[in-house]
Length: 238
Image (tube, rainbow, N blue to C red; front, side, top):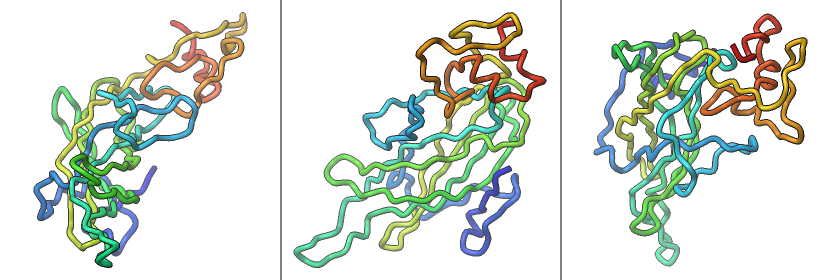
């Protein structure tokens, strides 16, 4: 299971227990740093491209038959105006150094809180070059491994925080992302199933194993390669 770092202990420790951290406020109006949305996963295992022109998701899917947690590529915006000036030998102070994200997971129907934690992230978000924000992003664990959630809909609420190079603490407003958890719902048969129950992938197809069980269909041949031998039959159509 992943270790999480409470915001209040970032300078002194590298681990934290779930459920001990509350959202803490910054002296900021939450508009300087903001979460634009969750980026769609790539089809070729190349990771995320943190650009506002990339496709974004309105909700997530986690198939617990194959995966035990859900991470998301968050596109972040910085609305501070650039202050650097080479002619005046003035350094850039509006760039934001990311430090962490506070995440709260609740059940959508009941509102029951299931996890509350802080995780460390890194990277820098450039200031606005014009009237548009500067953009970057970070990968954040929205559902931590080990919770063994029942199938259903969950809400992952996240706040991202950091510090400008000028020493100002900044924190985004709360961004809420719905995630559906299921048990085997994403499996499809793209090729053939042998008499012995083995799934064969479609001929000539390149299957995405990086995002198996996440945000879309997963071929049954990939499912069978990921689950224990005792669960291989669960990857077949019922």
